[in-house]
Each structure stands twice: as structure tokens, then as C-alpha cells.
Length: 387
Ligand SMILES: NC(=O)c1ccc[n+]([C@@H]2O[C@H](COP(=O)([O-])OP(=O)(O)OC[C@H]3O[C@@H](n4cnc5c(N)ncnc54)[C@H](O)[C@@H]3O)[C@@H](O)[C@H]2O)c1
Image (cartoon, rainbow, N blue to C red):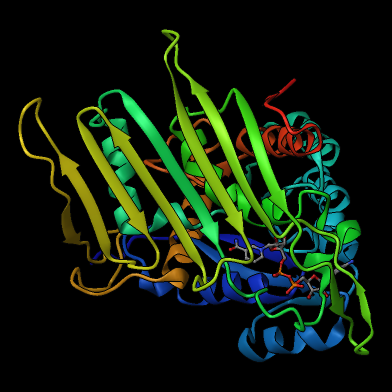
């Protein structure tokens, strides 16, 4: 254990809901990480609901500013970086304002409610090349997934045969669950479940260079009405489930299929992120259903093909106090992701990490994919991505 001097990065949080508390909690247990030269310090929080600020003031006594107006937070010269976790219809205005205020941004997905909003955010980022602008996507920081990333970097798979990836929830299976903003098109966006879950699914494939060339999407609206807060049944218009059949073209004319599922109505699935990669020389798979298990299958031309199962302990990109045999979980993945963001601030935009947060360019590709998927659903046909 070293006593490395840590440079503070002063954070503001905009949107004090579910995800904001998770990120604040990750900041509060920074002592969990070893050997880092940076440390986030929460100095300001904004939520339009004053009652939500109480949790932050109770748990962060040194918090210098709480406000219901995010512009006040942006005017605070103490704030260097902002984590912003607000409903999707607010991403464009707030993310642009954060970048224009000269702050670094860790924004939540889908990084703009639609492609136009995403482009406006990316334009602001381009005008401020010194700003670190990244999107939140924590699942690739699971130790088994980090191993898979290394296999990809080492080109262990040979020729890729297929990639199967997805993110599944069952939390909407109850048709009487009251509607919230995540099920309203004007707040969540036309993408529906794709905007909610899709960046998680595509972050790693895009980082691997597997950008789909085209897509045939099958989108389903299963529950058409839900009760509102008063019990009255109101239209529920967002897509519940999406299955995207994509073609990934390689340089030599070869192409392989990538199937991506984003489902909010997947019986038995609480929060299941999964990835299977099959290649001519090696295959690997992981699912958060068995969060410490990495399955791999090496083979030679004529040898046996058998899945190997290995428990991967707390083997993280950023070293931690946790013993190597212990289990890694969701909040650990957020801590690792935040460490990647803070390290990126220290390194600058050109500094390379083993695996970093989703980039602005990667969010742009997800918008191209989801926009094409909507067109594919409408026309019942294959649609070129980026067309
Ligand atoms: N990375 C992940 O795993 C993950 C998980 C869930 C949600 N998210 C994303 O995080 C974001 C927020 O989702 P959430 O689940 O935390 O939602 P939430 O509803 O729990 O929190 C959003 C907060 O924003 C606040 N807000 C709304 N308008 C505001 C305004 N004008 N000024 C200040 N605050 C305002 C709300 O009061 C609320 O507290 C979304 O983009 C969502 O897609 C990411």
C-alpha cells in the first residue's frame, strides 16, 4: 500500500436521484482504491426537488453547495467536473451548458434523447477539446469482462464468428406497475428500451471496433397502458423490448452477425448484462447472472471443444484493498468506472487507459444504430447504419 499524493478533482452532481446517489457513494469510498493519483471530492449537488438534497447534506458534511438550479452549480468556480444523471429530455441543454461552462462531463446514457440532441452535445465537446466528455457504462469493468477485453486486444478469437450481447430487465413485467418518466416518449425518448439499455450493450463491441454496418430491428410494445400516480390508466408508448440483428463488416469483405437484445420485459432477469463472443480459435462468455464466472473455450483445429469455467476474483483495472478471492458487484463497477473517468481527466483526452469510459464518439454510434433500428422497425427491412 502506498501513500501516493492524490490530486483532488472537485465534482458537482446534477440530478440527485437513483444514479447520483450511487456515484456519490462511490466517491465516499475512494479509500477502497489503491495507488491512484487522483481523488474526487463532492463539492456541489443540484436537484430540482429540495427534499432529495437532504441525503447528500446528511452524508457529505463538507458539501459546499446545494441548489435547485443547475446554472448556479455551473457558476461555481470550485466545480471542475460534473456527473449529470437527469431524465433524457434534459441531456441536450444540460450537457451542452456543462461543457460550455468549462467543466469536464461524465454524462448518463443515452447522451441525448435522440440523434439531433447527441450531435449538439458532441458539437459542444468539439468546441472544447480540453474537456473530458465521457458517458457512464459500468459493466465492462467487471473483472471477467476486463479479461475478455484483454483477449480481444490479444486477438485470441481468430476470425469472429458471431457476437451476442444484451441487457435484460424484468422490472416491467407487472402491467400494474405505475408509469414513470422512463416509460414516457417525451421524457425518455422514441428509442424506449434502446435509449435506456443500449449504450451498456454496445460500449464494448464499439470499443472492439465492431461497428455494425446495418441493422434489422424487431421492437415490441407489450404493455400499452399503465396506471399513473392517481391510479388512472394512461398510455405507455415506449418500446419495451428490442432485438437488433446487425451485420459487422470487416476490412477484407468478411462480415459477421452481432445480435443485441435490450429488454425490459425479460422474465427472470433482474439486471442481466451479458456478452458471448465466438471465434474460429477461441470463444468467451460472461453474464452478470453469474458475476464472478468467466467461461472460455480454447480449441485447436482438431482438438476438443469444451467450455472452461473459472471464478474470477476481485481482479480489477484499478487496484483495490479487497482481497483477490472476494466477489465483485455493481457498486464496485461504478467505483472502477469513476476511477477511469478521474484518471482520464488527469491524463487528458489523448491519454490511454487499458479500458476507459464510453467516449462521445461511441455515444454517436449508438445513436446511429438506434435511429437506424427505428427506421428498420417502421419499414420491416434492413437499414444501413449512419445512412
Ligand atoms: N448507468 C446506469 O446503470 C444507469 C442506471 C439507471 C439510470 N441511468 C441513467 O441515469 C440518468 C438518470 O436516471 P435515474 O435512474 O438516476 O433517474 P431518477 O429519476 O432517479 O433521477 C433523476 C433526477 O433528476 C432530477 N431532475 C429532473 N429535472 C431536473 C432539473 N431541471 N434540475 C435538476 N434536477 C432535475 C429529478 O428530480 C431526479 O431526482 C438517465 O439518463 C438514465 O438513463 C443509468
